[in-house]
Image (tube, rainbow, N blue to C red; front, top):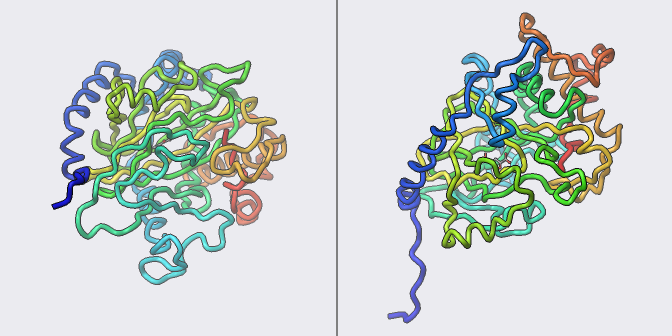
Length: 389
Ligand SMILES: O=C(O)CCC(=O)C(=O)O
């Protein structure tokens, strides 16, 4: 018999069961805070001041019923199609049906994989080391694949419904209300948390650029929307620590240590949504999601916006750090043009909906209609021009 004692393997079912009390406490706190409802705009087309105040107070808000059923269906079809067209393994050139995989001709591969229920970033230097503590990594059930798609990029290029979503007037009105009429885009990523397989996103704060800036404030790193195309549950959703966007750079490693080494940080709330709801999360919030040991799929279309002055003149960061780019006027304009083409794509599909008026492109609308020519000029490989900070 061996004298060493091996740590017991945490099974998927044990992980799911071990989260039970924590989920109940989180749901209770979320219900106390509330912080959800439809998008309400003033006569000037700006977000209602009560909602704005709630966002700044807590750092998040859940907009209910933003995307109607037909649009959710279209988004599901396109997202599932994108998933089916992923390389069958990370290095493969074909999808599971033997067809050429999507993205072989893209400048950036649109897929990221992870081992089932693993934590690809926690406790590593990846993404500027912004995920300092590793989450529990339960063992998936027998028969699980070796790798699963975890992230999909390029929704405006790969999903016609994704491009239309990017031009949503209600969401762009929210972006304008928070970041000003000349707001700039950030990036987009689709988080895929497959049932019983999806990896975790360890606790982190998104921003990396401005923590020591003399102009630092609670909005300087912008925000992300997450459009939920399936109902999210307490078992698979994103969790946030309300108010943490006001704290500056937080020592997450220490928070976990002071919590007895447990990732179940106190004071966090789960962002449980219906399909068609959209969350907004300040990028300075402490937030993350656990290994999806639940039986429910989550697909979250995530895209963010910044104040123009937060990105202008800054150096490329996060997943595009190695490009060494500087975000000059040209770069910001070219990436922002995706918004204008998206507005037109949406107008073509929903001609009766009031179009959003994006101030930096007023007078330039005809050059940025959604056409095959602008697809090549503006949309193809647009995410090589992301504005990550
Ligand atoms: O949806 C998730 O699980 C993670 C999302 C996230 O970390 C983000 O939007 O920054």
